[in-house]
Image (tube, rainbow, N blue to C red; front, side, top):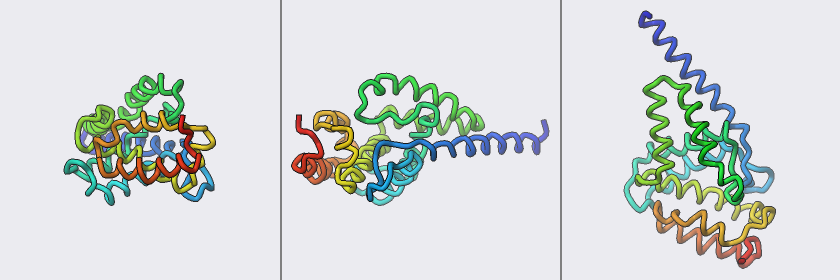
Length: 203
């Protein structure tokens, strides 16, 4: 194979991946937009967290590589193209989430040329492992973003799903590992407020 054909093959694999991830725009989450007009999509969620990271990185417990964290957040939900969105407070779906998403990661990232497939899959695995400062802060963003929208939409999805305090605290049990300051804000200024308003059930 000559160099030109090899480059074309690489480009075609990259374009195939780019076309494939367009499907993320079709995945609808349970969180409403800030104005409550509709539910947000996965791609909107990823974009929002990327911008949030650029703005809020100063609150990370440890210094992070901001661009690396942004890339992590932009790709971490691509697996939902195959696996679907798993609602944070759906215990039955949570039981199969890991297996569904691992299978999806195997297929989707493999569409890329081998070097990029290895890079992207490695970053996805890093997020899942929750060990590096970047992964910890990315998880903080992943938990903070829907909470901000729930707050802005007057707790709409919490009310609709009759969410209680215990699963919210369970979902956020490691949020502080990325940012103690942001977790304190979530707990005191958002969760506390919506408990008082009755949007989050206390039991």
